[in-house]
Picture 1 (cartoon, rainbow, N blue to C red):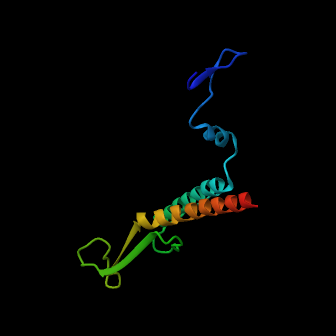
Picture 2 (picture 1 turned 60 degrees about the horizontal axis):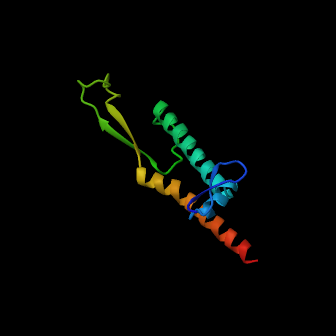
Picture 3 (picture 1 turned 90 degrees about the vertical axis):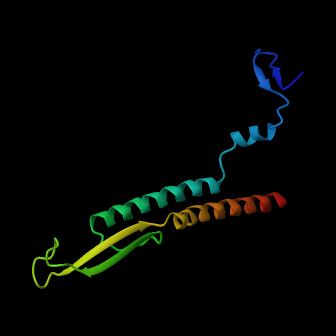
Length: 131
């Protein structure tokens, strides 16, 4: 009769010969563990990044940088006597702190474990199906 068939008892339309009928089964099953690990990993990485970035904003010289995709460059230079910050003989050094975010390295740290989780999930499902 076609793609949509009417249900005889209720008179509603339902997909009978859907070419994507395998998707109906996967939509009712719960997501696999790799999806859960991926969501948790994305959330943890985002929170860690935001917490470390905020701590570096408060005290950029004394805070430890733990994440490899946040880069801190500290330069010390001599300040001229007329510049702001040079108020005596002993304070003629000026400290500059530059904080950078390495986006491509963040994407590697973000996507790498997610791909590994899903590949391991597919491998485990294939091994379970082979038994």
